[in-house]
Length: 193
Image 1 (cartoon, rainbow, N blue to C red):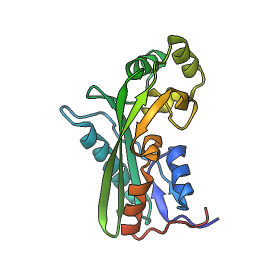
Image 2: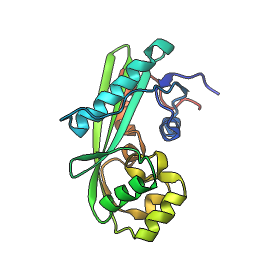
Image 3: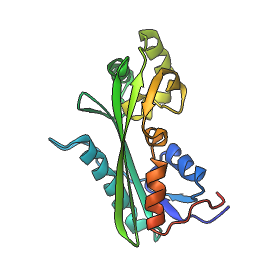
Image 4: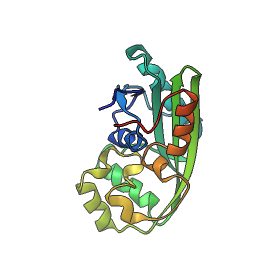
């Protein structure tokens, strides 16, 4: 196994897997930060602020470049975080059912070039989701820790009618933009992971 070339300031197995898919071995150092949106803060400003804050919070623990990222599901201008319980998860899916929503993912990488960041917006259109499907999906356990209460790369893929933009960004990390930032920070890709 190759030594880590990047610190991932996230416990997300999806982000770790996405980085592994482009050959970037990571050391994982999740950072606990306040993820409450600020009054009047746009969704883009929100995810960018959190991505930078995560990267900054991990700085005392590593000498490696650090990647922080955050994803938000947005519908009708409302940021949907992770559902706190089954009722909130069901409410989120009812809100997304039969509609288009935005998924915003920001990535920030600190390193020799300072803090570099990017934000990607992807449009996701869901088909109508029945009440029985919503209950059954919650029972799988998959939506409990996902922004917007669903995982596009998992069982909820059957709800997705159309996507315009970056699939990997909806999963949790926009690989095209991330690779560009990694290269600017001198972080090698396509290593053995």
